[in-house]
Every structure is written in C-alpha cells, then in structure tokens.
Length: 416
Image (cartoon, rainbow, N blue to C red; front, side, top):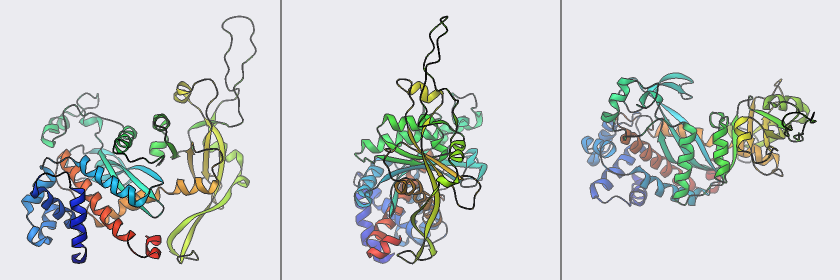
C-alpha cells in the first residue's frame, strides 16, 4: 500500500474536489485508504486501528456518518473519470443485499436478496456500473426503501416508520420500485454528461415492461434478461381485421393468434436453430490466447413482437414493435435455460447479442470484489446518509484498484 500512497492521495484530491474543508479531504482519503488496506473487517474501528496517524476512530465515524457532504458530487467526478478511462460499451443495472442481524439500520427489512438467495433480514442497494469487456466501475447507488418504511403505504410498519427520523431518512421519501430507482440513476448519470447508449440488466428488471418502456422513452437500447414467461408474437405475425357482420361497431385489427411465452417461441424454433458462440475467456486454464478457457454455449436468436396490455397501450397504431429474443440452449439441455430481450437493430450479429448479454458478469465481479476485499457490506452505521457515504467511498476504492490494473502491461490488463 505504501507504494500506492502518492497515487491514492492524488486520486482522492480529484474525487473530493468539491469539499470545502481540509478535514473532509483528510478523512475522506484516510477512509478510502482504510478500505484498501489488508484486513478482514472494514468497519470504522478495525480500519482506524490499521491507519496509524490517521487512525482517529471518532473522526472517521463522523466523516462517514454525519459529515454534510453530498455523495452525488463525488459520484459525478467518479463517473467522469471512469467513463474516460473505461470507454464503456454499456451501463449495467443490478442490486445487492447487505445482510443485517438487527432492525435498527435505515431501510432494513425481511426481503428477498440474491446475495442470500432467499428472503432474509437485509438492506438492498441498487447500483449502476459503467462497463466494457476489460473493466467496470460502480458510479451511482440508491438504498431501496421497502413499503414497510413508507408511512403512506398500506403495508407500513409503525415501528419502522417511527425510526425514520432517527435513521435520517429524508422527509417525504417513500417506496420506489427498484426498476424506477435504476431509471432515476440513469437520468442522473446523463445529467452529469455521462452518456452510455446501451443498458444491461437481469430478469429482475427485464421482466418489468415499464422498465423497458422507460429505456425506450429515453432513447436507450437495451439487452435485458427475462424469465420464460413474457408473452410475444412471432415477428411474421400481422394484425388482421375480422370480417364485419354488419351489426355493432366495426371490428378493429388484432393479432389472430394469442401471444405465447418467449420460452414457447424459442422451443418451437427447435434445437437445430441454436448456433455455437464463444464470447470471452474465463478464469480456468484452457486454449484461449491468454491460456484461459473460452466461454462457450449455443444460442437461438429470433425476431419477435412482445405483447401485453402495457405494451399495447404504449404502442401507436396496431402493429407491435419487433425486438430480439435471445435464448441460451446448451447442447446437453432439453430446452433453453436463459432468455434475453433486446431492441438492438435487426442486423445485429448473433455474436454481438451474446457478448452484450453476457457482459453482465462484470457487475457480479464488482460486487464480489467490493464485498470480499473492499468492505462494501461492512458499514455498521444506521443512517441513510451514512450508507450512501460508505458505498460511495467503497466505489472510489474499487475505482482506484481498477485504475491501477489498467496501468499494467497490455497482457495483464486483458486478463483483469
């Protein structure tokens, strides 16, 4: 860490440029350094014990929990720097759980999180990451507020509502669905001047029609995971006007056959429609150019017309828009195992669709690295602002590691 100290100080000075007080610069840099130092636990007390002359537990705790700095200002500078360095091909949306034993922290509740793979006591944070094949960086965060914490909700929990003021939850802040938090962060990132024309997300977001429509309205393309359930028509389907029998209102054009699930459409295309695609090198030894095994599977790509009331209501005219259905169908499986929808142009190559769909691994890599090495889930404070401060500082620590990786030799950078 000593050899990187000078670089870290310069990086922190750039990220904390908006700070007006010298003590904020000092303790901000110290907190990020504490997250980067060796050690299993990255909460304030153990970090303070490792920081030497900067190991003032009270000052570090005040900086992360109570100091009145706006994390959005820091995130904007982080986004500018990482956008320039990574040159992202996509912005990835996801959420991650912060497991909690007690119930005093802001927005903690029994809810599902993929971190545990079940309903458990936790906070959930939604994040957006700038990503390309070789690197990625989280640049924005929101703490999800469950309905039990919203005093206007029918599901409000009086005990949780009573803790809002103690946790510093802004007055008037209510429950907002995760997909809407994602759209809000995309809007904020664009307001900073950070433009990424493609959004990636898993089925937790892709199954929500309003999320996909929201991206359309913003002029953003997407490749999003979906379950096998969303309904659609084949691209060749056309709405027809049924014969008029002369009584009542004249019939309107409609699709003659009912929409089917995207899984049914992929299965109907058949195993023979699947094509082999290799999209990147993994982490196991193999015959790739860096000595690693290539990631490989078989995929079906179909042009379809997603259906459903929300889509019909948002469609001008009677013909539903086309998009891509991508289905992964491994050779040894009896049916497809994963599905994506994308509104990329009809001439987009299959290899491009697959590479972009699979790029979502970068956000999982970021979460794992931040939780295992950079203390993302170690914040022990209970306040709303404290949580946002901590995840922002953990994002800076992650970005600093990414920048150092990208200054290595081309071979090392390609493998990072």
